[in-house]
Amino acid sequence: MNGKSVLSCPDLKTRSFAWKEILLTGLSVFFVMIPFCAIFFILGKIVQKGIGTVTWSFLSQPPLEGMTAGGIFPCIFGTVAITLLMIAIALPLGIGAAVYLTEYAGQGLFFRITRAAVNNLAGVPSIIFGLFGVGFFILFVGRNLDHVLKTGLLFGQPCMLWAAATLAVLVLPVIIVSTEEALNAVPQSHRAASMALGATKWQTIREVVLPQARGGILTGAILAISRGAGETAPILFTGCAYFLPRLPVVKLFGAIPMINPFDQFMELSYHIFIMATQSMNAEKSLPIQYGTTLVLIALTFLLNLTAIIFRIHFRKKLGQVSLQ
Amino acid sequence: MRSETVAVMDENLENLVDMNNKKRANPMVTVHPIEKGEINKANSIKIRTQDLSVFYGATEALKKVSMDIQKQAVTALIGPSGCGKSTFLRCINRMNDTIPGVCVKGKVLIDDIDIYQSDINIVTLRKIVGMIFQKSNPFPKSIFDNVAYGPRLHGISDKGVLEDIVEESLKRAALWGEVKDRLSRSALELSGGQQQRVCIARALAVNPQIILMDEPASALDPISTAKVEELIHMLKQHYTIVIVTHNMQQAARVSDYTAFFLLGELIEFGKTEQIFEVPKDKRTEDYITGRFG
Image: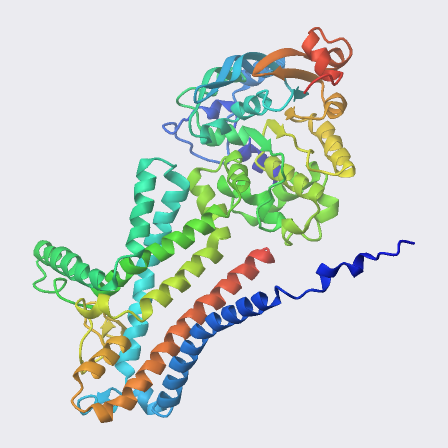
């Protein structure tokens, strides 16, 4: 047997580099603690100060006495309504654009320009979208619609429809990019198989590609809701109101109540903004602000959760398909 | 039930040429041009290519290939990678059309109809010419939905009719016994060989006349390969089969005719025994004896 064991090699016993390891590990833990602490303090403070305000009457009543008392029901209603309307507008547009870009456009110059435009759209500050909304949707589309349809002043004024449309443009890049990724993840061989069976391109997209991409498309919808639901700037000029004595609801055929997209609306984030900047009595409105903030965060989370549950449901359906 | 279905599915080649203007009073009744059928019987050539060339951009992937493919027989295309055999195969159902930058010159005649005419209905063409791919590619749907995919595309929605088609197709693909109790389960739960046979059943469900196979067994284990080969042997009673294969033993086992391609050219084409036993061309002999490729 050899007298010199490999283990007696002195290098193995030195711990000369250990301090570097410890330092770097410590640093990375420190860096990860910063966002953790930030979110903990923000959420902690909001929950701590807001939870006392959030009661059933706070959730179900309109603001009273110049927003120093009462609840925030119209704001909750407005936020949910505009988020749903936003998704209803943005999802078909975004999916359509992504389908075109992945399935039809090829890799030419037009494709690259469009891709660049989509990516740049994601980087535009939200206040610009707000101003764009006023200029394009209200003054251009709305006023011209009024002019052509002779409807007086119906479309050419701020309302929920234009606010939702503005938000939809804001979240469009998110939906397009995630849908594109989902479509690209569908194996090319499935497209070939479908085409070889005599399917047209559109039949292939509808029957094979889109069903497999549902999960990714819903992820896009989730991200879009996260991005759009709490935005203030885009709706600032396009439809949200300081205070409304009524809900933006219309009775369809005189009986079925439905969201009126041509009415203005109150919204949670705007409500927080005006209470923080223009309240007549800051002391009395402060707890309401905390309560409203808590509700906004909870609501965004709930909307996200719904979309996540949808996605899980679709994934399951794709995994264990049944006859029906 | 099935015979009626077949009548619908069996779009005769006459219908290959788009006849949107021709009114079809009853879609269940397809007029069979009898004289056409007689010509087919007399003529045993199903597919005929004349000076078929394919260009990918500036590269000539296939150089003036003229070939007569026999009806209800298996024709194997062999040759080293990149020799144009897959390209040739994909000309027969015009799958090359889906690749940008591809230019096809020359003629491909199926039952004497040039399928590269401008008024050819590609949907009908691809119903007549089915295709099996190298890697089995069942959709993430149930076995039933996979096989019923084609018929549904072409407008069959009656559940009873679909059930008949699925059963018949799976039987022809020699898979019915293995899957009949779990048609509603995902096709992805099956083994690789079974998945490939689901793909074959899926292609058979639209009642094709020609089946193109692009290395259908190259990703399968020996037992599954043997099953697929056995299946090919059975299928040739009803269908004209063109198979691309890397495996020369396989070509020798399954095919009646063999074509040897090299660098885009058809070097030699003849009966399989002749190609393998007494090849006329030196290059064919070299390839078959494993000297290159």
